[in-house]
Image (cartoon, rainbow, N blue to C red; front, side, top):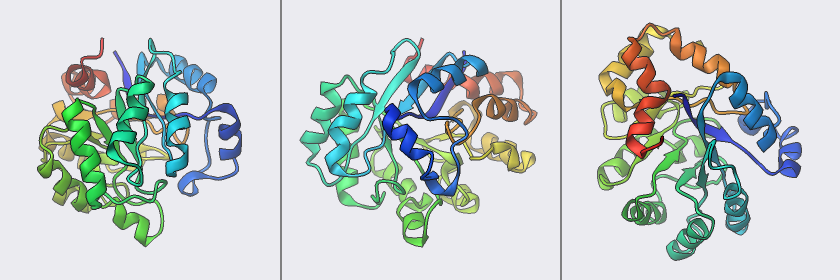
Amino acid sequence: MIVDCHLHVWPDHIADAMQAQRPSGMPLRFNGKLSGLLESMDQAGIDKGFALGVGIKPSVVARTNEFIGTVPRDRLVPFGTVHPELPVEENLRHLQDNGIVGVKLHPLFQELSLADPRVEEILAALAEAGIPVITHVGAGGDAAANERGGPHHLARLAKALPDLTLIACHFGGYHQLDEAEEHVVGSSVLLETSWPPTVGDLDKERIVALIRRHGADRVVYGSDWPMADPAAEIAAVRSLGLTREEEDGILGGNIARVLGIS
């Protein structure tokens, strides 16, 4: 089974607008629509994926979760959104009302900091509710944005919230791999493999060493669709030279075990 843990999707009218916005300066390689996502999954042989919704401001949290709650559950696991400017109880209600089972944080797009006590308060509530969290970690914006998602902040959160299932995108530090290796690799978090436009750009020996140091059983595959091509990213993981057991675990077995995905 192949599970993609990093699939952004928007309502059609927002996806159309995103084509001109170039998130993090990168063009969308696919259209960002639900129909396009399911087509990409079929073409790449992906059995299941995380449909990620990101509410960039408090006023859109409710409708973002309403949309993510409509994705087909046979193919997609709905990961919705929260925002630190909303009360904890309101964030939880918007998730529960729409049957959302996970949360995506994005320090760049949401202008939130992983060091914000309000974020930690929300994450503590999610941990208590058994709701997993996947978060962007590392660079991708200006200096202030890069600091908000710094690997050192994530490491502190992981220590403070040991009961939270926390997935760190981009090997724990997008374009901050030295910091990720210092602060995140070897920690309790799950590491996710996406590195748009492709993880194939990274040094293979370094990535294999990083995976094995962290524990290959705690690394999960993600593409970052529609900024990256899931089929190419699966091929890049398979080209690393890992054992078949390590490869199968990263491409789906590990996250299926952790979250009970069948």
